[in-house]
Amino acid sequence: MRSIVLRSYIVLLLLSLATEVDLFPLKIFSVESVPFSFFFMIIGMMMPLFFWQRFLLFLRGKRTLLILGALFLLSGLVSVLLSPLPRLHGAKVLFNYGLFLGTSFSLLFLLSLERGLGLFFLKTIAAISVLYALLSMIEVMDRDFLRFLADTFRGGEQNIVHGWLRPGATFLHPNIFGCFMSLGILIFIYLKERLTVKNSVFFPAVLTLCLAMTLSASRNAMLILLIPLVILFFNKKTAPTALVVLLVTLFLLAAMALLQSRFTDLRNVRVNTGKTPTNPVGMRNQLMTKTPVAFNTVGTRLMLWESAIRMLKDHPVLGIGPGGYNRALKEYASPSLLAVEKKKIDREYLNAHNGLLNLLAEFGTAGATLAILFFLLLFRKIIQQQGPVFPSPVYAIVLGIVLSFGPDAFFFSRFYMVISLSLLFFFALHKDVSPSAGATTPKEPIF
Image 1 (cartoon, rainbow, N blue to C red):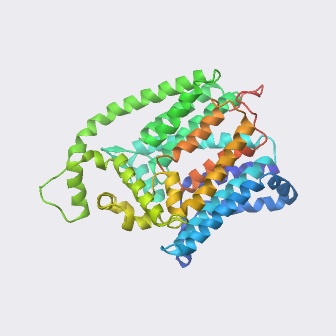
Image 2 (cartoon, rainbow, N blue to C red; image 1 turned 30 degrees about the vertical axis):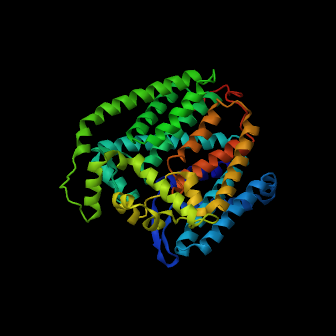
Image 3 (cartoon, one colour; image 1 turned 90 degrees about the vertical axis):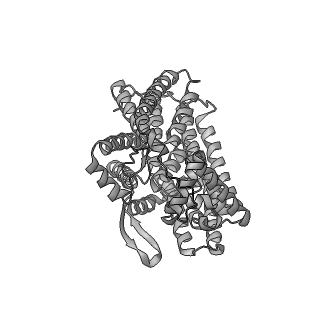
């Protein structure tokens, strides 16, 4: 009975996080809305109370990590209190950080209660990734379904670049969706080497995920897939699989480039009257006409990084305050960035597009240092747990997670943060994982 309850909870938690849907507003506490996943996250953090003795033993070897996590949240609280921005908003964002850590720790404890639950957790993530890949394909083909997903989960947003729809399924942005697809592929490779996954399941699943990742048009997703695949070439066991996945990915990327070429003429549709417009949209069009390279996504990200550095210079120790980056952009962003991204800034959609710079801008050197120490300790434990065989599927997944926060900062996504932290905790602290890929192979194939 306990096994059924635990497995059902894992599935419901991951699905509720993946839906990214809000239930109802709660304006009295300056909280925009209560997410559907909130109740499952709270239930998960209460479940260790039913296993109190085992929970205390579980925590005993993780005191240093818990202390660093608590100090990070404490530094964030001090930053909230001293921030020049509204305190309630910062407190809400800091509460989300606590939820991320608490949910991931409690999930790791639940996985320790029964042998095999850890692998069930990974297989659940893999299955959900395939399900959402299929949703994205329906989204691309069915306009009514697209509108339903956009209106229900993304506030009506439809991400279209050069006339090409970027699907996101139920996620807030195609980048989150694309990165999850890439992680799903890496997890499938891990399961194939760690266990025996039938080729009749593995290759169709990976092909589906590769196609969905390609449709997302996320360069971040390509980065966190292609680099780990190259590393897996140095492992004799994973090299054949990595080569096949890489060739499939490159073929799909080339095919997508050919399909998108018919829309490239839309890039140059700009109106330049020769006069300097006074409204932001007109200014954006004229500036893009004169210097188109400066206002692609790479150019805007460089300006976002510069803004983060300016915030750090003014608030070096404690930062601008948790969740304060977007709100501070009106003061710290360059006129060009304000003109190009005004709509996103007004809707509070932007972050620093770099995990470290986002932490430095919002938490200062104090909070960022604690966060870095926290993850360095995690990585040390991963090496102790997995061994020094770096070109393995475990390190490919870890590298994919780290790389995903290089060109982006997914701290606003409940799903991606809990998945990332839970995977890092799993490979660093879970005792039911063998040190090397393929070390233990069951006689019967899974799936």
